[in-house]
Image (cartoon, rainbow, N blue to C red; front, top):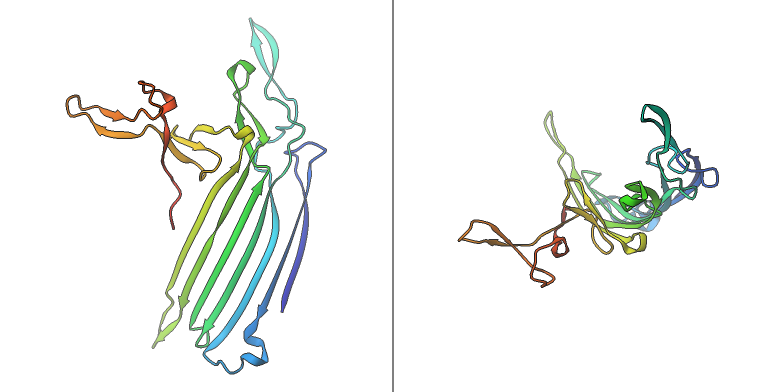
Length: 251
């Protein structure tokens, strides 16, 4: 029986005095079933272990001092001047990911064949994102804790070891399936035009979906692409853009 308990406290100057510290505990347990007396009658199985874990992880990967009221220097009509360089946000805090894992390890024929399978579920809250602002505010965006994100999936690994004289052969096969979804954004508002301009962050969808005009093919008389009028208003505008793809692999 294996048990591990950890806890760490991190402090980051990316956040204000009220939220600088974050506490991130974790716990894991495992049961080596193959070590039990009742398992001695299964010689082909050299290892059989069940695992489970749960823990929290913090993220502070943003530019420094986003919580503070900062000023920059410039010149105006030949005279020195200062200007506000960002909008202060004293409530900024750690982005936190809670992860739950279940796993199994199987070794066969004195570990010549190893099988590992894992299921994980990661829930990220207080996402640190740049929320777009109207240009009339004098700023293009402000960093806030504005979202929730889910990642869950399965990872499989199959490996072996075989000797042919002086030659060792150790093949390994990996398969991973991850399902990603945005659970919450600021007032449900999507974040558009990321990357090269065609990606979107939207509630209920995977991260960074391709969001653009839906093509209906090429008009043979003009050679131009025909786009779908998805809102049926008789015009092709930005309101006609829809989800046209997902950059995340199926597996």
